[in-house]
Every structure is written in C-alpha cells, then in structure tokens.
Image 1 (tube, rainbow, N blue to C red):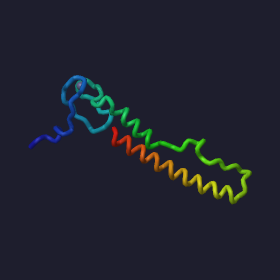
Image 2 (cartoon, protein in one colour):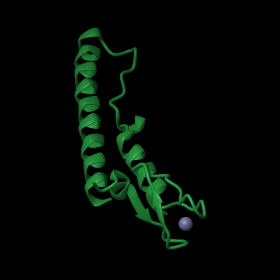
Image 3 (spheres, rainbow, N blue to C red):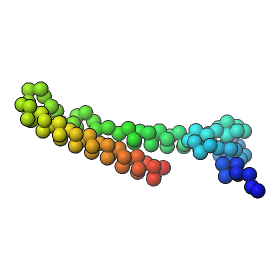
Image 4 (cartoon, rainbow, N blue to C red):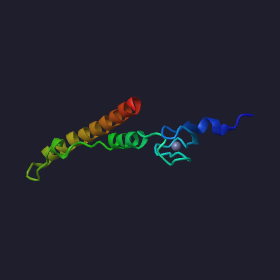
Length: 101
Ligand SMILES: [Zn+2]
C-alpha cells in the first residue's frame, strides 16, 4: 500500500528535495526551511484583502441629521442597498482572485 504522505509531498523549489506539506500557503521545506510555495503567502494575503473589500466611506450616501425624518429613512434604505452591493463586490473580487490565483 502506498503511503498517503506521497500525495502530501511537494518538491522544494529551493533545494530540490521532496518535503511534506499541509496544503497551507506558508508550508516550509523540512530540509532547508524555505517556503515550498514562494507565492503562497502573497496569494493568501490577496484573498484576504479581496474578502475584506469595503465600500469607501466617500461612496456612501451622506445622511445629515438636518434632513427630515422621511428623507433620512429613504437614505438609510439606499445605504443598506449600497452595503449589500459592497458585500457582493467583495465576494466577486474574492472569487476572481481565487480563480486567477
Ligand atoms: Zn528545501
């Protein structure tokens, strides 16, 4: 029976030896302790960043307290829609980054 670790090993780009890896972006070679995937942490950071995309505050509709109540209510509705839009954009960005990465 083949040892399952065969599927979890990766050839180290630095020393050329096979090393165990845990499918994590910052796995390191057990021989030379260099990153097995030099671009791993960078890709992971990009994914994190895409996921945290937020609507720039300047793009949110301003709601001055001087507005009448009905107008503020209306603006809160618009703002809710904008936040929903921001959540959708961050999901799409994450998706694109995940596919491109
Ligand atoms: Zn190595």
